[in-house]
Length: 280
Image 1 (cartoon, rainbow, N blue to C red):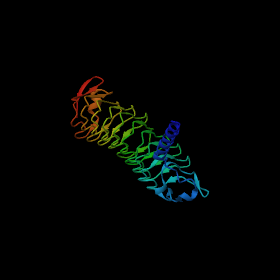
Image 2 (image 1 turned 90 degrees about the vertical axis):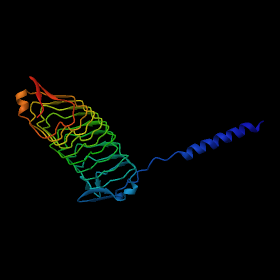
Image 3 (image 1 turned 90 degrees about the horizontal axis):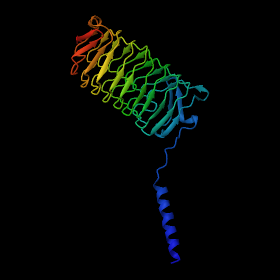
């Protein structure tokens, strides 16, 4: 009977050892020295992308040279990358630089950045995005297919190309910042659960297919300053039952609209400040 406590203790020790051995280690960041980076005129990139795991800190300089750009495709398809720290020396994020980083959920864009190139973060796992007002250019598809994105803070940006937030399937609400005048083509195309879009008085132009195939969008309000609605802008918005316009019926008649901008929507009239007007 005296051997029983010893046997029980042995079983407990063995069980603990099994638990410890089964626990997967956290990915180790292997990019801790400057020798792990390549810096040239096109920007910085890891010397060996197979070493990109976990959270990575991009250095602000390499061999005494300041880092101002992230190179084309620098981290593309690094599926084990979970976080990235971009130094405040960087002004330019290159084309496809983080494309396909499906595990990248955390991103802070420093206020030094002015340009984000084509497809820079396409297909990442980013859940929340704040674009600082220092950013002046968003090239096409730079945040396309962020399937987990639920929160977006958008600054008044000078130039936004097509499809920037296309297929962001978890986005429910978008507030366009005051001062922005143009909503670019395919800007929010195919955002499956987008329900609310707040458009400021400054917007004058809504581009081709800007909100096409947003099936949960139920209402939209246009400012009186609106001059143009592009083709297919709200096509296939199957719940869009309320369309409002801040100006008068006479002003609405002067808004330039293109074919099928309201195709396959349930709304039948535009509610103006002085009455209901027909689509045109």
